[in-house]
Image (cartoon, rainbow, N blue to C red):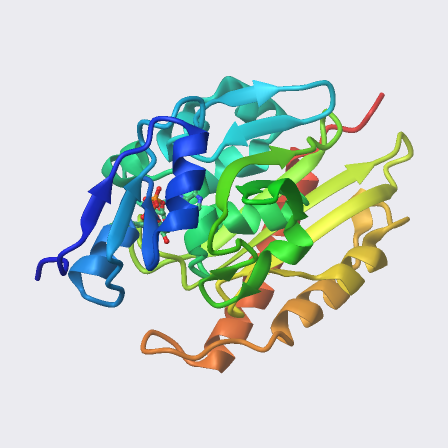
Length: 289
Ligand SMILES: Cc1cc2nc3c(=O)[nH]c(=O)nc-3n(C[C@H](O)[C@H](O)[C@H](O)COP(=O)(O)OP(=O)(O)OC[C@H]3O[C@@H](n4cnc5c(N)ncnc54)[C@H](O)[C@@H]3O)c2cc1C
């Protein structure tokens, strides 16, 4: 099937992009097209206007600031995966990107596109939630920052306004040597995950946990931080963690049911995967000496 007819626009600057978004009704931004075009070809959506942002200057790139790393919305997933800076400062993101689609889809697909599309099983927005990223958004009122905790409004629904576009995603790296773990289950490599999990840990010199992030994704309509379970880890020794409350929290999520699996199976997976992610985070952690 082919997409229904649409008008094509190709702005070169943020200003032109903003003006098009303000002027056009039923318009969609085209980034890598890896989710948008299949949805148009299947006629799930039928925008009258496509605004191709591939030529907008300076929307791609990975920049390091004093205490943050900013990734432009148009940065290709392949470039994020290949980045040594991301690998050393945001290793969880690199680890997760290995599981996103295929070489071909990562070559076109962008981190911003994935975070705007918001498939519940998408790894990149999920890692943004785990890392407490900030979304830098531009609209008629100027620039605003949306914290990850407010970005996810539901199934395929972000907090982005109709006339706004995502400019960049800002990450605050965890301390050097922090532990990170990632686990997901997909039927075939490159498929969207049926469920997944991530864990981040920091500990003091005495081996006691000082900071923890735990996340399940692909289970509910949006990625879910297990905040209470995170609190139970604080103060525990990394070599003898009581992970029962963590597994119990993931196994109690309000899991989705679909043609692939039942809600019960997804909940079971959520428990298994958070345990694996947490174990990996304990293994990858380098203790401060
Ligand atoms: C075969 C295949 C396998 C895949 N497997 C996976 C997988 O395992 N995991 C995974 O996470 N993804 C997977 N994907 C999806 C892929 O990661 C997409 O690249 C991603 O979801 C969308 O990014 P995109 O740049 O292609 O965005 P597009 O498809 O161009 O756009 C997606 C949506 O975001 C909006 N948008 C894009 N950029 C912006 C912006 N800067 N501001 C505002 N709105 C914007 C668009 O209007 C559209 O609504 C797969 C895709 C395919 C085709």
